[in-house]
Length: 143
Image (tube, one colour):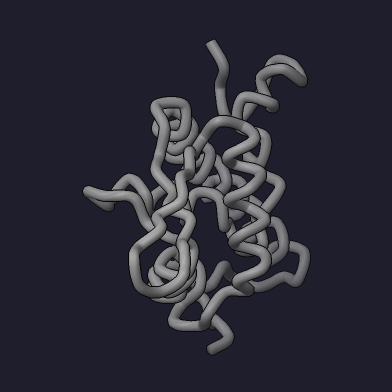
């Protein structure tokens, strides 16, 4: 079975193509989580607004273009589906929903994030050791 920390082949990585490649902001698991939390499809603008409130973006509005690109890639990989909502008044909106494959990908992200956490803790310990200091229990995060 595929394991998020040690994919066995390139095909394993393709199952969840972004796994580990967007670590700087973790947009894919954020979007998948938002869609999994919603009882109904969400349009891109709402996803951007909700993402800003997520732990990954900490109140800062993410780049909408980047979110839309991620949604497009995720749709190409069948993690989400979309359909147009065309109300009688106002503009048409593309509505996104999570697929079963997307739920599976989000489940793999849960494991991958735990593995990243362990790896980062090891790196923190190595870095502190290299500086000859004790590993700080409470990190100083830039705000």
